[in-house]
Length: 270
Image (cartoon, rainbow, N blue to C red; front, side, top):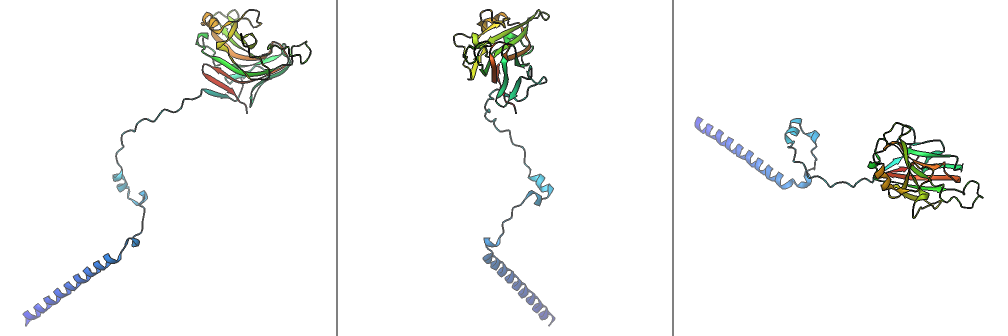
């Protein structure tokens, strides 16, 4: 009787275990058949959701450097001058020369032979004349004629046009060694571009100049000739563009830009 009772207990346990397995299997089958993609919600895992150790293990090694990119466009060599002053590269010699949004304005000078002004650049100081490759400038000027002539007779003949000077020293102590090279628009041959009221572009290093002859008593010489003869002179006291102190009545001028050795200085005040 004990043996049969034990056998019945084991049989009951086996049947119960089989029932549990059957139920689990049925549940698994039911779940597989009823859970769809619509029941799964999307979730973006962010770095903050991970443990620091996991983030560290996920970090890869730095890759090799990529190929160099294409070269950018070359600069246009333009420098905007928005301030004039003694502490600036460009300065005015007196209050009659002012910087405006349109350029450097000179005058007006009722008597262009007695009064005038200049704007000067220190950037070439200490440089030899032989190192000057190019100089040009764009300017407009106006005049009602020559002092002493009837107003409006148009007889300024370009004498009132702005002029450019390089102040030099040949190595001799001042003042004996002080010299200058001057470019005057009205002495250029064959085309002096002296139209008043229009902007004229003067290329100094392709024109003619004079050495120590501000008054224009002697003939001009080609820039290349003067440069070869005085190439060892040092630019000691600025490059200046001036209006006045020459001729003309009711003279004024507007300087837009100056180019020196490939750098274009555009005058544009606030």
